[in-house]
Length: 375
Image (cartoon, rainbow, N blue to C red; front, side, top):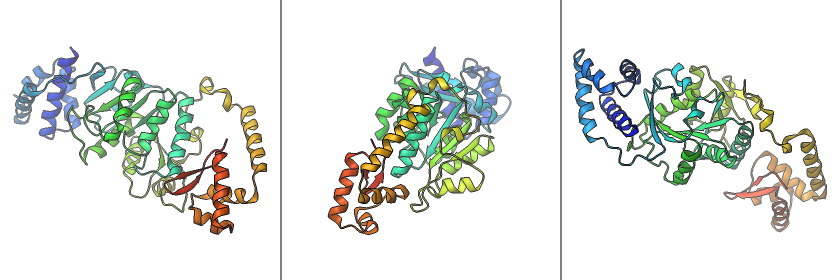
C-alpha cells in the first residue's frame, strides 16, 4: 500500500513540477481527490475541464510508468495535505506543500506542541558553533523539538546537538530524501531518520538546485513557532527564512554577536528590525516551561557551586593568564595579538596559553585562540 502511494505521489509531483503547476493548484487537486487513492481518477475527470489538466494527466501517466519504489526503505512514507499526519502549522502558510516525502519513524513530532527552527551560516565561527550548542542543549533539556535545514555549519550543528541530547529533530531538505547533500552529512541524516524525520517536497532522486532552497526555507519557517538565527553574516540566506517567518506571524529571534568579526551582521540587522534578542531560550516568546526536563545541574544551588569553583580556579591563575582570558572574552585572537596586547614575549604567552588549555579555559580553533567553558 505504501509503495503504491509513493509511486502515485512521485508521479504527480514530477508531472506537476515539469508543468510548473503551483503548490496551491496541486493542493486543490489533491483535496478534490481526497488524497492519493483517488488522485488518478480525479485527474482523469479534470482533464475534460481544461487543456492544462489534460496535459497534467498525460504527464502523470507517463511518470507513473517510469516511477518505481525499489529504493524505498522501511522508514519512508508520504503524507499529503489532507492526511492527519500533515504538519498543521503549514496549513496556515502561503502555498503549503501539497505532498511531503518523509524518511523517519517519528512523524508525530511534526505536530509537537512547540517547535523551534534553528538556522544560520554555513561557515560559522567558533562563537557561532558554541552559541548553537548552548541554546540547542537548553532546548533539548526543555524537551523541545529542533527543526533545521540539514546544511553545513549552524544547521548541522543544531541537528547534532539535538541527537547528542537524545532528542528527535526534523531536517527539511532542498532535494530528494534519498539524496545526501552535503555528502558529509550521510551519517547525520541516517541518525536523524532513526530518531526524527527527514522531509522534502521534492520526489526521490531530485538533486539540489539553487532555487530549491528559498522554497525549502518557507517550510522551515512554517513548521515552527519560532525561528532562531544563531549566527549569520550579511546577505545570508537565513534572511529569507526569517522573512517567511515574519510573514507567517512566527517569532523571529536572533543572537547578537561580536561587532569585530562581522559574522553576525544579519543577526544585528534582524534585531534592528524588531527580532527578539536571545541570550537564553527563555527569551523566546511563549516557549513552554517544563521543569521535568531540567536536570539537577541546572538548579540554583548547582549554579552557585559551579560559580564558586570557577572563582577558585581564577584565583589560582596568574596575571598573565587573567589578561589573556579577559582579551579572549571579547573576541578570538592569535598568539601574536595576545602577546602584543598583554605585553608579553611570545614564549611567555605560549606558556600561559598552555596552562589555560590544560584547565579547559582556552581552545585553538582555525589558528585562533578562543575562550571556552573551563573545568
